[in-house]
Image (tube, rainbow, N blue to C red; front, side, top):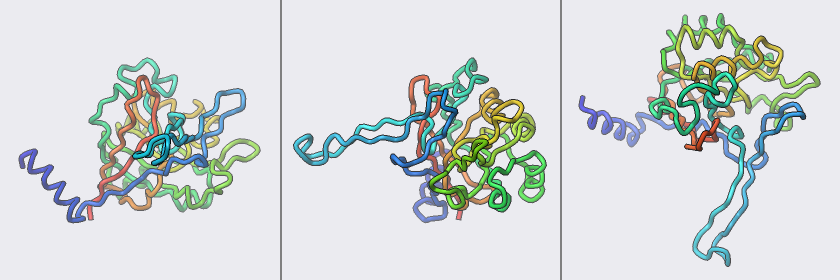
Length: 261
């Protein structure tokens, strides 16, 4: 089939509903929680919107706003330059990434039962190998998303599940991350939680292994997504194009999936 015919087929499939578009993005808003770092470090800025005009004396025919936001607030993309292990890689910031990587297949690992029982659930290599027994091998160049239904189970007043000893949210251990990179050559790792690493990952060796190893290998992260329950375990296609910020370490984005049927 010629390229034009392939694209025409996709357009027809979207028009007919044979392919659905699933929005995986949280709404950027002032009350959306940000990751909390130890107080000695700089903190991520929340989303702030400042209205400039709304059909009034400041602009009679138009409505627009200024806004400020950290690169890692809301549903956002992590580029390799975000972490020290990826700082010296070529083409490692959002403005230099291979745009072909912004469209990729995804495998969705349903961890909802485990995370409902333990919000600090740790994703392991053994869990993913067991998942493959049912759903097939995780393909090279694809995303792995950990479905937690976090928005449904997290306390809205304590979204990071912060306790006296730090946050308790799910994420992979070091062995799982290295397996995804070295054995499956994934595009990156995504989650509905506020970070790709577990809340207690500062206690791991190395600390924050998903950031440490993924970005050191030139891989990507997606976090603060929603609606992963609307995706099949395999077969969906994810579109995740970050803003083209000069030397950007990441950015909020509108990430969505194309799903058959």
